[in-house]
Structures are given as C-alpha cells and as structure tokens.
Image (cartoon, rainbow, N blue to C red):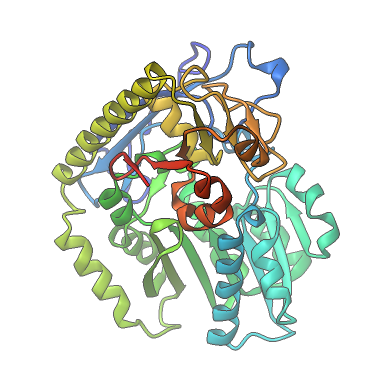
Length: 415
C-alpha cells in the first residue's frame, strides 16, 4: 500500500492477458529503488509499495503483481550509465555491432528509448549516424545537455511515437537497453515502435535475462521499475501477436547475464539459429513451470537468513562493515533483508548524483569511494555485485591493505 491507499493488483498477464498469474515471491513493502533521499526527507512519511512477483500459467511470463505509475519512478532519475566503465564500453560495442550489421550511415536515424545520459547514443554518434534519445527524466536531460545529442523528454507511447516521427522522421534502428522490462502497456509500446521504425528497420533490446536471474538467485534484480522479467518464449509470443518477429537472440555476460534480441516486422528479416537454441535452453531449465520459481523463492529466503546472520555476527565481534555500490538492486536487497545503518553504517558509490543522499527505505548514507581508504573497514558488502571485477580492480589498494569484499548471491561468500 502507498500511505494506506488502495493499490491496483495486476490480475492479468502483461503478455497474453490471462487471469491465471500466480504469486511465488513476496519481497514485502518497498520504497522506490531509485528514489534516494536528502537528509531533510528521511524522517518524512516515505511511500512504499508491495513488491510481489507472479508466474503466468498460460504463457510463462514472469511479472510484478502491482504497478507503480511510471512518472513516479522516472521523472527524476539518479542512475547514469556512464558511472560504470564496463557498461560504457559494452554500450559502445553494441553501437558498433548494430552499425556494422545493418550498414547504417549518415542518412540513418537511431533512436534510443530510455537513453539515460546518452552513453549508447554517443557510441552511435562516433559512426556519423543521426541520433535521438527518448527519456522522461528531466534531470538527466539537463545533465547531458552539452552532448549535442537531440532528446525528446517524455515517455515513449504510441501517441508520442507519432509526434517523434513528424519531427525527426522514421528510424533505421531503435534501441532499448534495460528499458523494455519497465514497459507496463506492451501493446501500446509495440504500436509506437511499428510507427517509428522504417520498413526493414530493427528494434534491438537488451535486458536482464530471466534464466540468469533464476540460476544466480538474483532476487535483488526485482524492483518496481522492472514490471517484467523476460524469457525469450513469452517475448516471442508477444511480438508475433503484434505482427513482428524475433530474428536473433543471444546471451551476453553484462550484469552477470543479459539477453540481446533483434526484432523486425514479420517477413523483413531472416531468423537466426540463436532463437531456437535459447528457446530450447529455457524449456530444459524449466522456465515454463511454477516449481522452478518456487525453488528460487526458497533460495532467496536462505540468502536473507545467511547474510543477516553474517552481518549480525560481524557487529557482535566489533568488525567494521561498509557497502559498495548504491544501485537499485542493492536497495531491494537491503529492504528485503531489513538491513539499515546499524549493520551497514554507509555505502560508497562513484555516482556524484547519489553521494550525500540516503538509500530509500533503509536510510543508509551514500558517500564517495575515497571513504574506503580513509576508514579501511574490515568487510565491504558488494551491493553492485554485477560489476565485481571492475570494482575489485578499482579498489585494489583497499584489498591489498587487507580489506575483504562480500558477495551476497547466489550464496553469501567472502572474496
């Protein structure tokens, strides 16, 4: 509930509209994962919403049981892609691949939905193609104003797609990296996509992959922005219902497991073998069965107990602990485990947008990374565990001095 008011339950599947969606994981009432607080706000009545996940018995789609209005989450947004060197390099590699594969040139327009600070579009700009970013976050538009990349500040819908085409023309390629899981009205989104793509154009998506989430027990990937947790099977059904075809799919290692998918209008592209291979792997892993998700929920509960027990033990022994990384996923983990500043006095993060603020729900202060070397805590809980290699490299001096990092999933361990 939000401040005691009623909140809509998603009774039907977002993909197939079936009413047979069964809950398998309840993470409790959570504050919005990217709504960090200033010091003067932490004692106010902070909105919290149910965070529950369900499985559709009809098509196998996994989704949240409740929705939060998009502008409550995205109008002021504190996550920026360029804060991670790993992510920036990956996005530029993606731009290289799309330009090369589809032969894009100076006359072609590439549109990025959920463009954030424009990191991916900067990659495309290196190739001389025309670029346009779409994003509702006004603060990020101001942050990226000097990039020279044109931007439409607003939500992408079927209606805004028509406005965008009238102003900028049709797109040769539309991209959406870690944005597609946010979409609450999928039919409207695809209608807008069809409006915006030129004939033969391609939609390239990247997102957290459900099979990796299950295998890694990455329950912290669940938060209100992510209304869908995508496997290829339900996605194939969705696009085919709207006259489009998945022509290629591949698993990529970013964030410890994502799915990259290429989509075109039916009849406009050759379907590659990767699609059938991934569909077969999903079937073998049991992604079409509720029992798979029930086991996942049991393992998440075990991590909760193990990590809370470990942190409480360190506190009793007088061991000092800090957190590293303040991603949205970290706030799900902290909220679900009920870990506050008494067990984790502060979190360091490279993003200047988050430094000086407090985590939503748990109210842990976020500080600059230099604090680690100043304090040298005994242990650091790695909340941004999906960038473990990059962070260990950045913090080599802390590790050399005897500091230890803890990783929470798929089981609690000290590196």
